[in-house]
Length: 214
Image (tube, rainbow, N blue to C red; front, side, top):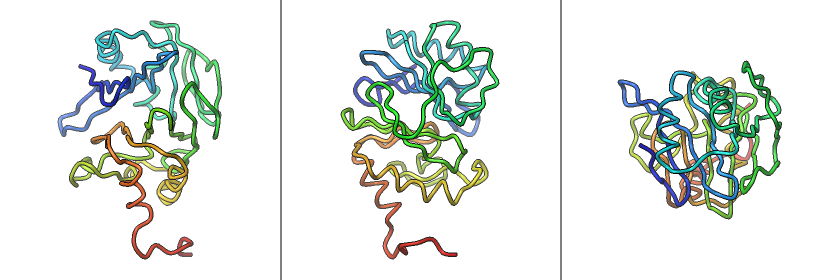
């Protein structure tokens, strides 16, 4: 079932694997109800059940990046809801439906602003709304409990999933240019209070050198 994780933002878990790892989409209520990411192609029924339980009908689908657990249900969502679609300008889609809109760094999508944060993948974007105080992290961040640490902390996604893990971590600096209280992640537990401070403590650790080591 969906969970209203912060006001007007619903966490829809589409799959939980035997290890407890969860895969999600987020549905945001607003002037244009917007679904962020679409799960796998074989989790669309779980996604639709979650959407229907919110009482909302998405009118827009935003893809954060082209990994299959985020874009696999793209065609099914468009077919069912007729959504307008927004896809990163770098993403290569293997879908029946072409993207309606391509977006890039700094572009506005409704209440959200896109931040290009490559590293996990070259096309990866985070979406942030300072008005809502919400950052939708895509796979730029995961909940620390995914890696065996306590809940309430944030980490970059594992190196085994990254095209450039060093860039993925260093580019987290870009997120601190924005104000947000909640950081919502697709894997592990989200941080719904004071998330910017939590991320700042990770990024700007004591003794951090001004430039990366060569």
